[in-house]
Image (cartoon, rainbow, N blue to C red; front, side, top):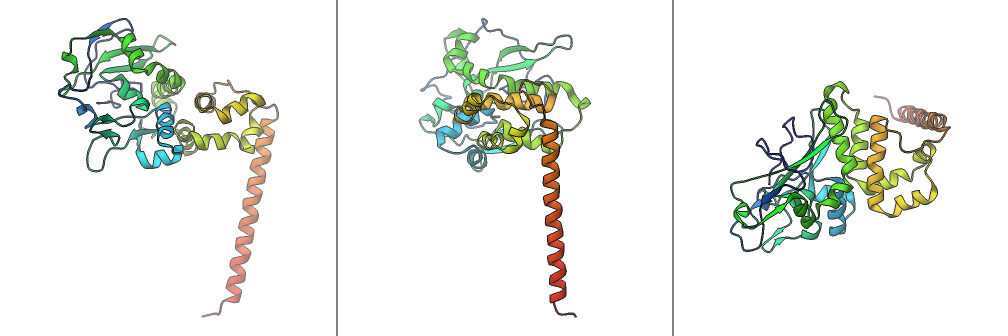
Length: 303
């Protein structure tokens, strides 16, 4: 199971191929079947390089009964998705191997909640935006690896049928807006400049650490700025899929100025006052620390 994020033509976090792909549409057909009993069963899980999407993380952390922060710490590694260090998340492997940590002798131990990359295999998917087009183009292609015998199985089906069979449609819909963020950032190249560390931290939290993002939107700072209808806000606090999609909209607004979340008329003034309050508290704390240091110097015996 391979992914290639260094190829400038690949602008999508779903599985891709190191070879030039032959484009397939939803109604194009290909030959493939994976099944128990095939000689290569589980081999694709023994050498993984899987990037996780926000929805992958949501499904897996709930499957394991963990918070998002716990799951990220125990089961993932962070990597840079581009030269500016935009954070991506990879699945951690078993110690000293490239084998998936959830692989068992019977197969996948989290099969019902397996990541989108696993569901797509042996298809690749990518989204690209042509220079003269505002709308991104999505296409698919067959990924062939030497170990995989599924391509010799006597079954042909369309890309659409395979996606339905593997349950990737929901996964793609849940991360559609997030993938648009990745595509827009990569398409912009160096012209936008390197994001600040604050932007990086915000991207990480809103993309992957959904439980802490929920805490963030419940903070006074957030409510000072954004005008969200109370019933919808309660929905964000209780429905994770709604919160996940809202997080992508929030990132688009903060990073690219796509204003889909209404701001309060006095938001700028409230932010200014809150910053002043924070700075005043910091200055007061510094003053107290200095006074304490001076008292300690006076009380301490001289050399």
